[in-house]
Image (cartoon, rainbow over all chains, first blue to last red; front, side, top):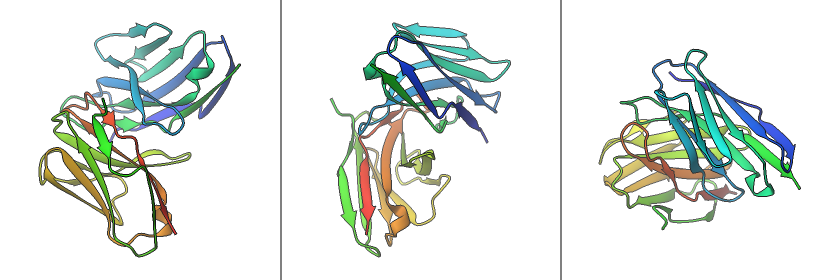
Length: 112
Length: 112
């Protein structure tokens, strides 16, 4: 089955810095890669996703890149703000399967 | 505009009790899932259902069962609660292919 590795487990940055979280996956058939943000005490929420037919997608301060050859994808947050502090989960799934495989999460801490 | 609703935010139960966790979604999603979330372990899949009355075991089904009598409702049952089942439980639903994945707010269960 699919295996998703996520690094780092904890990331501490100063406000205004950039943050990068990386995930690797094992199943070359995976074609959908969402990212979720979970603030303390709240539900995980989808913040951005990418499908295997594109290499990069941006939405304001966040972007996701995908390297299908190397089987890894990354979340980039620029100009971090304290409200970006949360746990971020990556996931991978493939068409025909309804079960995404999640990474273990990255706790991002943005210091004012 | 809550779309996946879990009936309880916090629950405290005694060892040996039968516990029901309820989840309702209003998005007409085919698939529903139960996860438990523990620090450092990420999201672990307990059971999922891809249709009414259909269920499949996830990665950690031991000690749990599920019921899906209607499309919008998916229940997680702890037949005899134990202290090692103290955790945050998250329900989710999705369309086929893992798209539109939406989580509930979670139920924090404490077994004493």
